[in-house]
Amino acid sequence: MRLTCMFSFILLFGAAGLVVFIHLQDPEEIVHQQTPGIKYNMGFQQPKKDCVFSNNQDRRLRKNTADGVATVKQSDSLHPSENVPAKLQSADRKQSSIMFAMKDQQKGEEINSIRLHKRRRRFIIKKSPILISMNSSILNLPTLKSEDRNNNKWKSLYQIQRERKRVMRETCSKYKSNNRRIITPYHVSRIFVEDKYRVLYCEVPKAGCSNWKRVLMVLNGLASSTKDIQHNTVHYGNYLKRLDGFDHKGIYHRLNTYTKMLFIREPFEKLVSAFRDKFEHPNNYYHPVFGKAIISRYRVNATKEALRTGSGVQFKEFIQYLLDVHRPVGMDIHWDHVNRLCSPCLIDYDFVGKFESMEEDANFFLHLIGAPQNLTFPKFKDRHSNEERTTTKITQQYFAQLSPSQRQRSYDFYYMDYLMFNYSKPFEDLY
Image (cartoon, rainbow, N blue to C red; front, top):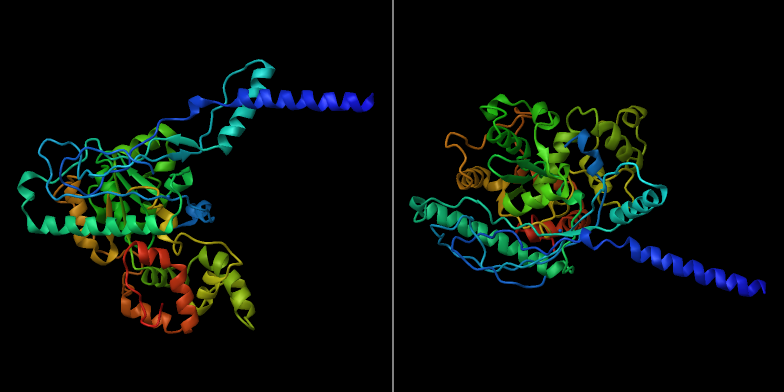
């Protein structure tokens, strides 16, 4: 008798759980599919359907996350249409799915049973990302003026952009297995928003990010000149909005209608630049947080002073930390992969610039968005201005301190960035 009662209770409990589970499903949270972002294409094309990833204030971004990624295929043309409002639209658009982890705001007083139901539902929504439309930059985007279309310089720069985007797409297609695009606020947390000229800029540290923030502040009317903006104002003033600060509708709207761009740099050169900046100069964050942990783990017979201050980290020790799967302290945005910082396989960037051709690429981008003619990308170096910029020669001198095995492992660490942005191998003995 007792066994029968117990069995009946289990059945009733299971049935009740099933009813609650079905009741908690909320199909209204699922939003329609979307089309991918604009491509470098100057002709009017009909879309086709198809199936288809600082500083102290940035510490919250220093956690590793797995990126969901996908492929976007497109074809390009060199001749813009006079009456098409969208800039450089692609011939091959794909519908993709993006998912945003959403937060429901707590509602007013209700009866206990409804309140309990809503608490459970909020929990489910936080755990289950929401499908929203893909980032399609198709509304009110600028294109070249009619008098510029026969300009060989602009045509050449368009061709360069097309090639960069082609390489990036093919790399995503080959090495990223996901055929669904999944995005969370983390993936857009490095993207800064400029609403007046409708620009989304993904910040890549040590690739001109300070000066790009200055440009965005001038575009937004926060300053009259880039020269008037100090370094601390750029990074600690909180004058620029981040994309993850908007609700899901605001994020969706901007990904679909704004011009999305990023600037990247040769990975080894970017790494050496970050090391020189953070460890070869006084720093009240990187020395005690990273320096002490690195010296403690990797330096034999470290002095008490070095262990106390964290100053004097050597490049070889820094590389040991970088390559250690059990790092004594986490990753940092200054030497993280661009692939993880900006998620170029998730977000279809409209413009990909390079630090090595910064002046030409930056001023071309400003021309495309219709920025004031007197606004050009600043050339000055605002930190350690008396020190020579990190060059290929300086980079090779630092990496000469490493063993061939360490150089190879460092290359492997940044392999996807080398591949995705079409950088050559920095040393001949690498494979």
